Image 1: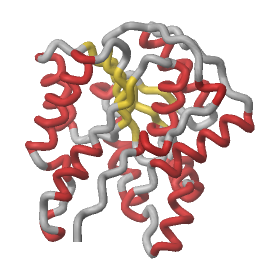
Image 2: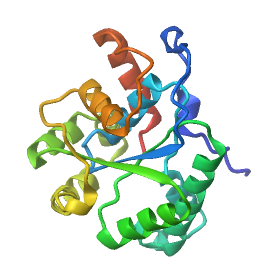
Image 3: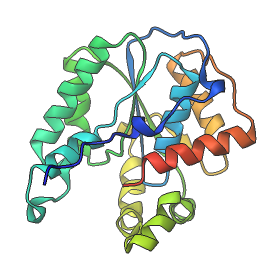
Length: 230
């Protein structure tokens, strides 16, 4: 039986009427949005993308999934531990920045110091202007957010949950407190809109689209959440 075609998250993000507005910001910078699981990386990245019409979201996790699909299940450990993932991330992101006339947004948890340095140094050597942001939150906030994820309820029905992500909270929060992971942006008592606006300000980018109304934002949040159920 032939394998089903791969469907990316972008396939689920059908444009809505209020999405169409003019583009600006031709900076060829790379905005890496780091953070523990539950910190809000994905929602922040896609809301930033919506408000920067000529930006592009590039997800290194997809490279990891591709590596896993080429390996037997017994060999599917943490793909970040594999040198080919790290080298492919550097090469692919450098290509994306070189080819695209606008900011490239990268939502990805990366907390192992050696791996972080390897990838950041590799991108710098390739001439990429990286702006790194680490979204932070208390362990209690992260656990609450993980339990409220759309995928959490679906996962329960399918027989799996966010246990692995929960187990990574202490490791991630401890690692990300290191100064190498600046710029830190606290998210405990802030909305995604607030975080997006701070990232844009720190990166020197002008947001083109305005905030969505509460109802429209929740609709978009659901769409993004559905597209990223793993």
